[in-house]
Image 1: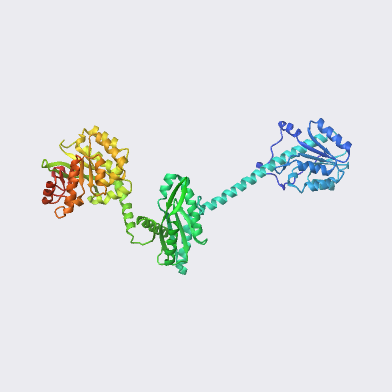
Image 2: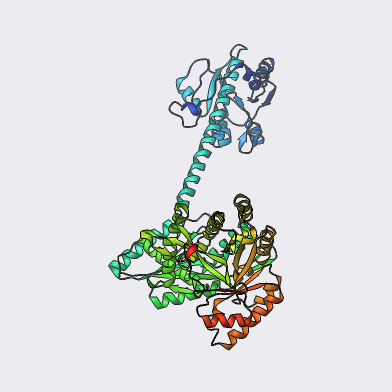
Length: 613
């Protein structure tokens, strides 16, 4: 008789399909025959008989013992990595040193042995219901009665081993399921943490900060408890990040985060806003103490030294502050924005300083101005709302107009015309000035194709356009398309622009000169090393900065300087142009000094129509 029961895993109901063991197949029989079986009993003859039947049936790993002590030894030796490799224990009703029930009780105390099926042999030849329940309650899967027969014993062993296989599969699936659940819980915990924390530094993030600011606003409005928000931005962090790589940048950010952790109290809300920006919210603090605290933070970070790959970097921080009080109905986003604006102002005023938010800060007005102008400039490029005006340049030697300087204007709403001073600085800050340069080149060349061949143009170019890969191909293509003589083109570049990227600018100038174009160095004399760069910079024309011309008649120093500029330029084989000439007396003086060209309102104002210029 064979009885199979649940096997002590607490599965009182049907297992879900994902935990049910696969049915046994013919291919699994060989594996079952290779199972490790322990046969234990006091009678030598009974044990020998069982071993013989198992060997005849094809089982190969059979351990025979007569004592419970040896059974436990075999079980202990079979444990590896918390799993026992014994697949079946066959217990006779009697052992030399303990009863079968006592042995089963010991086995039940260890998790490694609870999955092992037990075939219990009994001398009783009649069914004992109470005994069966007792045995099955102590891990027994099969009851066998003496005398054993070759027809009943081996199949019982095979059935018990099949049970062991199902237990192992189910147990492993439970382990896998528990591991999966544990991983999901870990992921859930990480997700919950990441919602309010920065992944790199472990500090709180902007979401957490905004929640804390809302609480501070409630305290300020209801209990008159003032708070302060500090917005901390590392100065020139991008230099390190670009030169040493993001790994070095991340290492520095972690160090800064740990420094700030030590500096502020646990009750303060310290966050990383993003990139190299941090913020800290301090509750229950007055303005003088807040300013003192911010200055201490600035001092702590001033000259911060960071070493990487043998290189040492010195950093500092700009700090913007916003006081949180009950004075105004603000929301968290407003507080954060004001602190950020104060930090921007601190950077604009030289960095490495603390600035308290002030609605009247001119830096923010300029920034808003730039933000408002940027879309206008983009729209003007897309909708052809730029136009050119032309100011004549008078040649002293021929007593005639030899060139026209092209000056760009922008047409606004209702026909308003804006001068370059209003939109070019914004275009430079917003990275749009190069597009304006390319627009001018395109339109000037197209215009020249329709004009008499004795009219030449000076075209102003910005500094960064000489680093733009589109410049040379565009000029070359327009010369071919329009057939314009390149000698009619003079590109103007300011002295300060030429100096900013000297070698690269010089190389591009030489390439354009190889096409036949000429160059003029504008605003000459504004820099400290003017003569040094003039000697090495490949230009044909020198335009003297207007600051030296405006008071030329009354300022003897300006006269000496202008004379020296003209003489040096002539010595180097370059022509000279005087700008801002508004009086005949100034023109006469410049002629005596040897000037080559005159430009200014005396000669002509910028005009759209060349015929009236």
